[in-house]
Image (cartoon, rainbow, N blue to C red):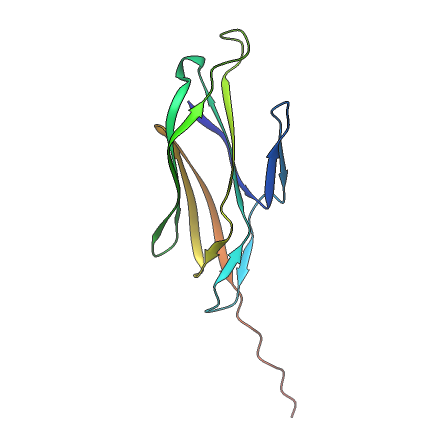
Length: 140
């Protein structure tokens, strides 16, 4: 079992054929000093597994900021369905789109979304940058 894909996006959905449509992939957060920023964000992930690994697993998502850990989501029974193709032809795949709206960020620096599904985990790392406002120009 493994995370084949993990990203943050503005939004996502899965088609009837199992394709994931992602809108606004990636994260770029720029903030002004001392002002919390709330961003609309969806965690998008695909888990692949051997057909023998079908079953129920815990899914936990948390955010690690430079100073703290915040639990964002926990479900002790997410179902990885059995294969629909003949055994051995394709790995099992589970697409996850999980809204984390709003994700409030209060400090600059390295941030990490950590996802754990059963015994496997994946990280999505991003940086929150702070832009100091420019001082007004003075004339003499």
